[in-house]
Image (cartoon, rainbow, N blue to C red; front, side, top):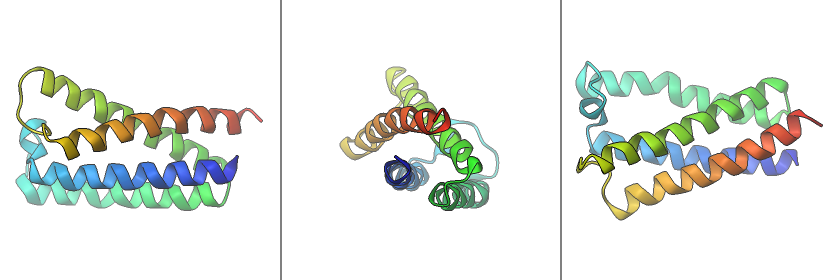
Length: 124
């Protein structure tokens, strides 16, 4: 089950990092009213990407910390889907392409499955 969790975390990380690349295209800092423009947005993502990648290492090492990183990544993926769905429903044009929506949907699906697997591993 740990191997499955590793690969779910890996796929989720790839989807979320690609979503963040897409976010730079859509100027997500304006959508969420974050200060600093592109420079601030990129600086914000240095620790976020480091966190995601370090979490993958922890999951691979089968540490308890890896399970916590996994849950945090899942929460982030689920939040990303619903936050962007909210803005799309309000008529915002950002993230209204097939690939943007596909990345968000993949993130949601994998995050839900990953949450179930993480909780299963935690309770074993």
